[in-house]
Length: 142
Image (tube, rainbow, N blue to C red):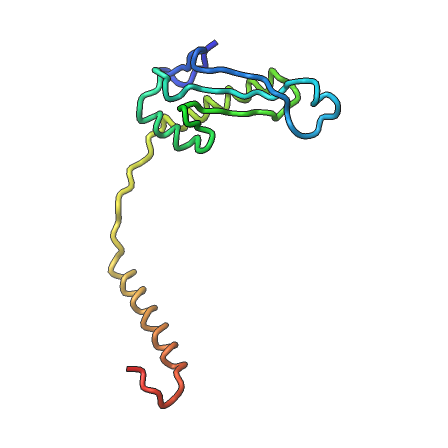
């Protein structure tokens, strides 16, 4: 069962491995017996379905969830249901890849206006005058 991302991109089963582990936190005796948390690994660096710029953005978005081997690891232990945790992990992976698909807007550098330059210099002059007024009388500041 592949994960559909967009019309051009879908992640194949061989790129994703899931392992079920015991969840941490409260849950009584059940938490010690049942492996309801899911750890999803997506081999992002080796994925043929993702273009290189998308992989670079995905690596940046993933942060520390991106391993040294180029795999993205998601751990989900939100619910007590193994099936629901698996669905949530797949949804989070799909959302992360969709966010990586969006090309960020290029920043257009702007210059400060003449009025803002004048306001900044007037503020500096005002501050300088205040500090000069605090000097003890009779001392030469130059």
